[in-house]
Image (cartoon, rainbow, N blue to C red):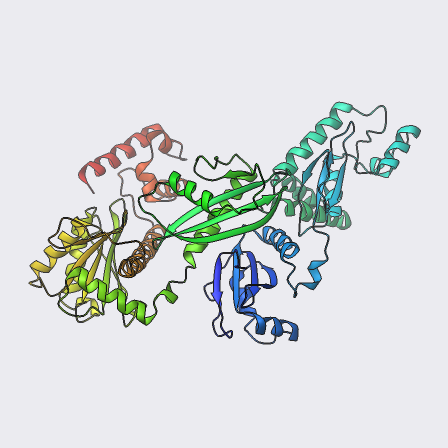
Length: 599
């Protein structure tokens, strides 16, 4: 049985560590050499939790589990609560031998508001109640505490049926009415409209809880503390704690539906596919797959292929498939839990790409074969060993950055990565590429010494022409083989040839070039983001006549970035404190003048 989760680290004899695990919450699964699950756990931080298994000092039972395990895999979740719920479902489904404590559990509890003449609020556990508005489950909070907190605010009944029936007969309300925690619908003189409104408000709140209730309660707690009514303040504090647990982000399906939410991510020439399966309103499994990408497929065709080929044979008849693309097999998600399910699928499909084990692909035999093939493609006069790649990154022509990464000695060499800040206002990608190639191949050569065997440029025919122009200017034409890799269709462009080289998607040489190009792209983006963050922290002076330091501070406080100020409309500017229509008109005119001048 193959694990159906996203991250995937093979241990052998436990020599490898899950260093590539993500920092977010999720569920992890240890399995043996046959793929049989041994243990399922949850974590607030997967990376830190998995690291504890190899830090020493584990129990004998855990040591025995680790000795039997050869693989660990994980699934990302949107919150700790979501991880608790998914862990519960996986344990119930897989029955792993090392999960004794949870295996016999009865599930987490939730809340429900009955659909009867006089609705009541009550907790539930296990099977979801019928003829009721059902909410939860809530893994981290006792539902009794939630009931106590909610009746304090909404004052609807929570009593058992026999208690309510007896009160109706005797017309004597219980203690909750006396303590202002129930509107007492058992009494004839109770305002029925008020009670029905309270029930409707409670259902609406539980359907989409927010911080509206706790804000008022915090004021009450502060007032009681000032009046030194500490016991009552403590009760309000406990109420706030219970209510805040409801606002924790989690995917909860409140209807007994059968749905599969799909998402696909692209990278390295592969697809990361994730399917979140919901059975009778419960997230039962999160399945992930790797597949070769076809760059000629649009999003619609992609999802039709994925859903058609990865739906389980035992799928429930009439199951609804939702995805970000409308196809013959799927429909777009609606609001609420359907959209949350697609988001959960998306983060796990991205995790497939992020954790794709590219290092295992780079075994010596495969690298040797890929480099030999690359030498033939670029007509290199010498054996190809060192490949360098240049990528250009900028934001609307600003903060242009050139990135260079190195592949040598059979792997990426991060210590030799370089980055250069290019012309500050340079929006021309070709000129930027020419400048970056010139920096690499002239003077001190960015501290890298000898030229590479192959210089890979991120882009197509235009980027290759720009790179060759730089080499010709430096008198280095023919000293280094140059090629470009265009991302849209992963076509290879050679100097002096207008027709690209198109390789099969599983060609080792192409996959190696894509790996190097993606590393350069990520390095450039990371450097660009750091430059942008520094500029925002330092705050670019506006230097607009009539705009002093106070008004400039107000503009930045309102828009946050220079780019946002630069593109703001006159009406938007006028809304900023101390600006007004007249100054907004002058500011907008000055910014328009700068844009026309290209500054």
